[in-house]
Image (cartoon, rainbow, N blue to C red; front, side):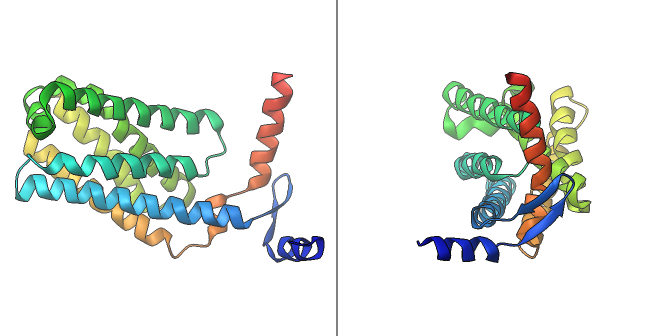
Length: 220
């Protein structure tokens, strides 16, 4: 690409006045937003399909949906725009810890008996819970930024269902129903995001640049 064509491409990128100066929404930003939305939708569909199979058919093959759920959630956390680096890293650590927890459970109980073990041995919820904590964190971010009711529903129902099951205060069928509602809310949230401008998901990049400069200044 020539210098003139690069300049024209940069000029065609939308610019905005941020809190700390002008910033542009680049083509890379737009691609990352699109990938984030696609991964979020795959995560919601996988979550719903796994729970639907568990409820309608049985728990034996339902764990197969954990793979696309975990991978898509991890990629969504890769491309999500969160300017607070510690929060972003915390969600990624939750995701990693939850994936390890699921793997250990699968090795211990056997892939086909994962959900039966979770139902009978509630302490395993502590091992797999961080994965859903990461998912609830995305819901909180979406509600904080866009005030979507489905986002706050996702954020609240997931931890209530898991903690209720862990403590024994919520019966298994009720906890599964709450998680099924959460998965449906996640699908609705993901679908509604496709009608939004990419700039809405990117947010104010001048804030990110300002926080990054502060971080670098403290590290020197």
